[in-house]
Image (cartoon, rainbow, N blue to C red; front, side):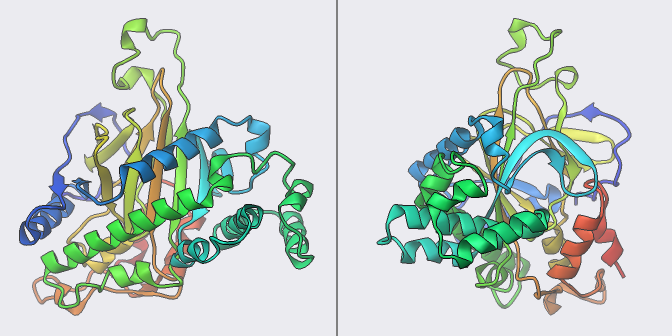
Amino acid sequence: MVAASPKSIRSEKILPIELPVVDLSAERSMVTKLIVKACEDYGFFNVVNHGVPRDTIAKMEEAGFDFFAKPMAQKKQLPPYGCKNIGFNGDMGEVEYLLLAATPHSIAHFKNISNVPSNFRRWDFMSEILFQSHVNMYSDELIYSLMAVINLGKRENQIGSVFGSDVCDCAIVHDSSTVSAYTEGVRELACEILELMAEGLGVPDARAFSRLIRDVDSDSVLRFNHYPPILNKDCKDKDKDKSPSHSHTKVGFGDHSDPQILTILRSNDVPGLQISLQDGVWNPVAPDPQAFCVNVGDLLQVMTNGRFVSVRHRAVTNSYKCRMSVAYFGAPPLDACIVAPSVMVTPQRPSLFKTFTWAEYKKVTYSMRLGERRIDLFRK
């Protein structure tokens, strides 16, 4: 079983690995066993035959690249956008990102308003982004301005007074159906995987984990990460098409574990993801264009009573190519009580963690540095 890495990595030993690949179209009992073993041994695995249409994935990736290709001045006017700053406590990285709400409400919302003029859907999408996700990141002045726009019944033509006239000129905002279809697809994939996990662990209620994400008040989020190439004058032309080497890369997103339940990650064909299965060793993971990468979050480690481990990972940049990833972070409602099912607690394996809510854990997460192990604060 993999052991959780310490909060600081002292050395930079690099050892590439291949993640387990789980074919979701295979016989169900075999799939459950493979997923449980992958979560115990790696905390990460790839899934193929996942059911998310290729066209949906392609449109989402195109929308992401379209947004990040915009001038910096335009991107900065959209509050869910960030660059280099990671979180609230001084962590920095070679990354720019966009945060979107990924709740069941936001998915259903766009289906129900498909007959409304597109300019109204675009503003509703903007408000969904802002008020369902990370609103506390913004200044009071900005929030009051947004509230005034909404309360006055103004729509897209008033966005320019707050954000600037060109902020909505990208596919992510213009075509909300793209985001909705993708989010629904990866959410259903996450729920299917969580139900397979529960079955494999012998949990009587197969939906014990997945219902937290399906809940209408789920706090799930979608994150686009874009890692621009870091040109290095010492890097020769022959290195252009190779995976990032240790000497020609920088850390794009520092080492951390994901605080939520489960992450469903999709990236383009540029390497960059590294996981740490043991102290002082980083394991580069090659991207698979046919697969989604799945990893255990902190909450799932708690809900399996430590049987699955939320493994630390990071993203490094490539010298010549940009990398973009889209991560779905499946999270429960803020008031959800995080506790392992009784079947996961035995005399031989007593309860390892205190009972807490997602709101309590989230508050601790945002009060600490990226690389700190907040889960240790909740051990008994």
